[in-house]
Length: 140
Image 1 (cartoon, rainbow, N blue to C red):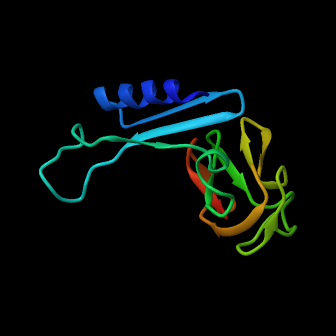
Image 2 (image 1 turned 90 degrees about the horizontal axis):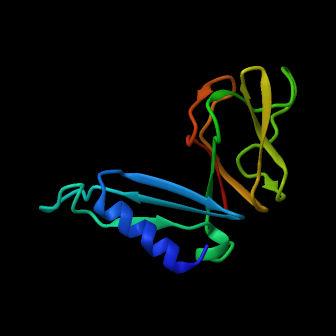
């Protein structure tokens, strides 16, 4: 995705009432969101939008990236009941490695690491329901 498209999307979010927009084109995902400042006279509609571009584009590989649930469903941290979890905080993972499984309508959807790195934190609980967009873990 070229910078002119990203700028257009940022302008769109800045002029609209939406607070978040995620657009994927080929292998690039751009997430633009508007946050409310904690103090000052600005309202949420006055706050400038902020673009979040994947770490491989905007920052070196040392930046942490969140792992999001792509769909609503039940989170499974292990391949089967009673087995070890796919990952634990502090583990090193490879790109494409399965981190979780989200079960939706009896379909098991693997959630894989988008890049290699170290698992900083796991925020999801095994067996809990997750919403699309929930942060499941963070990889540095």
